[in-house]
Image (tube, rainbow, N blue to C red):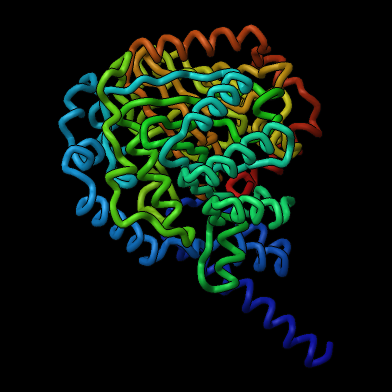
Length: 480
């Protein structure tokens, strides 16, 4: 063995050891994720080390993004009227929440500080066609501004219709601001967005760290998975549906159209994303936060909760764990991807073991092949704990919803997986309202008509090679 080979071998060992030390010193406390990375780095050193640099490091947990948040909060406090500030950051509405759920609202406020809002009307949309038609009508009626932030914005017929409306409204003098996620839409050429810019739309690309390596890492790993529309500061949309024909025509998904004070929180979240992506926000926020609450058909309490990896606390994950742990009678969950972090998995099993009716609905066939194996790798222990699992046949279910005890509903962009709960920029709406919860429960029960329930005894008889494949994929669950 030559000296060159020995030196190369020593360098490789040094790099592996150094990377393992960096992984172990990460302060996020997730031992499962650390073990997964150590396995990858040890078995495939070159690929593993490069992958960790790109996917494992969090280049966004920096003071720069905390500074953006501070600047936005100060600007809002100074230029918005006191009424708007109280609606976003005041605590008087918390007393309107049913006792036992108020502490959840406090927990959720540790995202960007916004709190629960009153005087809201929420339309739950389960038809992609209905969402498309409602959105088109609201966009056509916009008079002051349109703000749009989407993970996917396709080039199919439905997407082009939305794009044409945005460009036309910009030419008419409506202020149109648009955030597009880079990696999710990597197949779309810059020309597509340049056409929007030429029409007067302010287009920004999400994730723009200054250093090239960090920019590359952030674009690949820390993705803007949110779906937000705000029209004239009075109408808001959020939920699971992106802009594309899959969502408008093919898939089963859940979205919300909101009027009322919760639109303020959607607006505030959008402005933060726009600012951190290099966009310029107005000097005065008065036009962006008009009077919205008067005259609402219903008085639903809604808390909009954004979550981002720059924050100290993963509030959506923590809020989900809290919700599962505090379910007394039932908790029903819909998610396309079921790869729960350990705290959430333990909470689900504990809730079922204490006697709550815990049901999870996922697609029979995921849109990503490896996610089929990952989803199913959790079945056995969940079924043994008494959790009921339903696989939806037919159209792919993309909904991300929770409903519990005929009071709390959660509808948003976050899946039940590591990526959504720890890496992505997400946003969920927490709705504290009996009527809305009953409707959500009825939607879940109706969807069960297109499902097959997984039976433990039959599940255990699946072929050995499927068991092996599922367990192998599960080793890498925190990295999916």
